[in-house]
Length: 286
Image 1: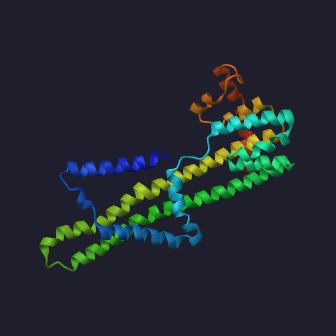
Image 2: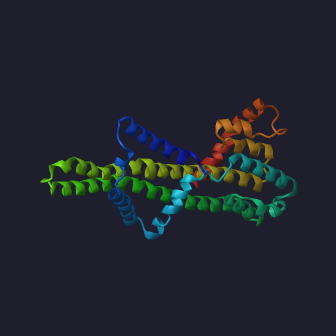
């Protein structure tokens, strides 16, 4: 699980509860069952109306995705691809056949499988790019569902408040009940704004960020598969792949005995940057 997601929610809720207590209020004042049902149910209903049923059915999966960490470990992928490049350079691509079932990342497994089957490198790249695009579209659609729900929630809250105020104005004869009734009416607006900014919008942003990271990892795999397929020097391939690591992770990626000292390893990674950047640009261009 990506603990930042539930931890962030708990921090926000704790800040809200603490502020209420410090002001001398009661936490129970923030609960109104009918307003909560209206906001949550109305938000889901409006969102369902916006998207096809097949797409909307991905909502539980989208929420679950926002709570889990990224699937890929780029450093581990680099280690695996460099090792396979060494084998392919020494014994040929067919020597990777027995290692294929053990490859965890589906895009890397598919790319190497096509290379082993004797497909042209350009065809392999085009096929992987198409698969990457389909996956990106699917994940971005999940993010769009969450973001759309975040847009509807405050509106549904306002609708609930208006309904509550209409009810209050219809009973002006009981003046002593006006204050509490108006407070309850505004609970719907509170729920709408709070759920949008605590739940829907942050989860949508996190899923979208995961989609972008998956694209970057896919570009790294394209570079790796192309290098393995064409018998590229494993050291040169490592330098290209390490460009896809963030700065603090790049220093940890070089294993002992391959690049010499840490300073030389970082220098090599910088030297390989233009080649990897061109490969990533070519992948995007196609």
